[in-house]
Image 1 (cartoon, one colour):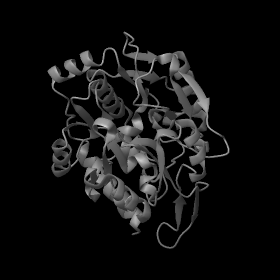
Image 2 (cartoon, one colour; image 1 turned 180 degrees about the vertical axis):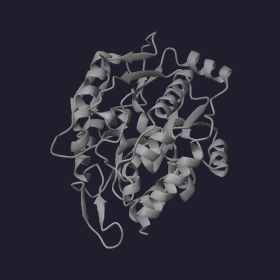
Image 3 (tube, rainbow, N blue to C red; image 1 turned 90 degrees about the vertical axis):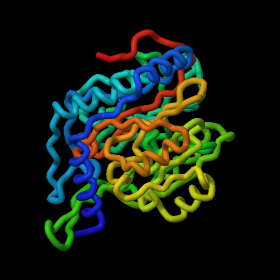
Image 4 (tube, helix red, strand yellow; image 1 turned 135 degrees about the vertical axis):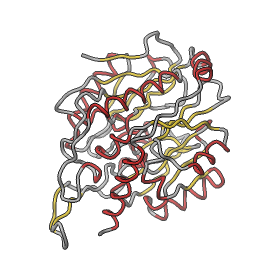
Length: 364
């Protein structure tokens, strides 16, 4: 069995064990207080309706069996898990925009790929918001008009990134501390190729973002915040947000799974974040512990990290020791069938300085 197959087996086993666990939700009084504090400056996110969630193309190693067959989704379970995650965010005072489903685009449930919001942690009026759309993998390129429509209906202006470069949004480009992390790796035409052993073939997946897009992104975010380039090495963790997560006030802490990263990149992270870096273990990496959503309400007196269930108690303890409350939600069906967990299912639209009354927007 290859290293990649062992990693997939570990991920499958972890997701299966986690499926029976209940979601941990924050204390009701804490949620109410967070919502009241965020009334004037409210974070918005985007999620994709899971009604048509399935494996269509099989764009990452989690979506197929070792024989190359696409996995079948338990849609009723997926919908239940999606609703629990959405409710957890709403209970925290976050506004959720819902992307309408399309049976031809089952990957809409993972809108972290949609693009990125400039100045995501800086409170701005809606009219000043600028969302930059991703240049997606060909099998998911059809999602882009849906994201654009959802954002424009909500009043958010959309812009494009130079189409010469593959770029998959905040899944590979996100703030951590005082820098942006840009994760990248070898781009492949996804296909089956001959291999020794059983089965006598394997599928090449590659990674999603071209390192050469860095100067384009730097021109968008401005020169006051440096971009730190980090290479990816393991197809099981094909996006940077599956192995890295900035969290806490100012995102000054960082979760990282070192084996998914090029050694030089991990070295740069150790040098920059020092004691604020938490290097997670393989079991937690298999549960996509780093694929978590960081939320600090207005005022910054407390901070939350929405994580997948099954994360080890030692890791949860390290997060709590840094003054951050972990909230665990079961999204195992999305991980073991689609290769995405909590953060993959959430597109961060930033802190809006203007409040709206209704928590959801759904486009036709």
